[in-house]
Length: 241
Image (cartoon, rainbow, N blue to C red; front, side, top):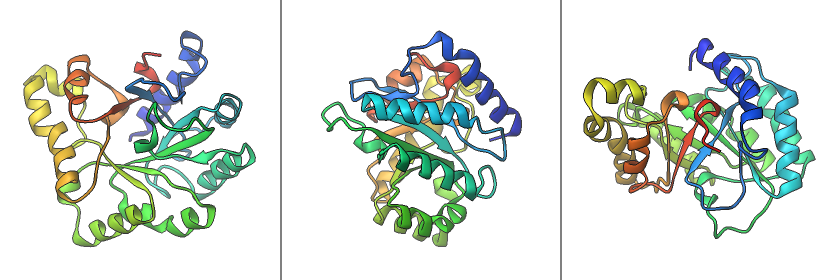
């Protein structure tokens, strides 16, 4: 994620909040299939701790799940920011919820669904002692899965064994709108989206979610993808709620 994209995400979050439902960055245990997550990276952008705190308090008060994501520990987010987020979640009595658990038949509870995007598997693995110490389960949205090294794949498998979820984030991290405009919807599905799901399944994972790179979605792609996964994750800038 570029610095410009990170700043744009933050601006969209702050500027668009008045145009959305109060719980637009939450999962309220209903049947919605489009989930809106906000970045909490503090290196590649400014982390808006006031808004982050408000969302966690809203999750506490409404027994909903706050949806947040970062990218690479030490690259786009500091360890201190991750610890601060966990402290706030614990202070508000939030459960750590992974994306496969976000289903309407789930037991409603206040929670935090924290995702880590892209392919910084070494950096994710370095956070393993912190995750274990805090009892935190997160969701890793993996891109370029096909080109990960055996060592990276072993680390990812160990994280999954700890209870973290492994989900799809495209093959080559391309913008869906640009790709569909230039190559068509069928090509995007065949080359970018569906292989990122099937390769995870072939590796023994059970992906239930697809996060678009850059958080930008495409209406026709959404419809097609929901035949293969249960939910799609987007950025605040395109949130429909």
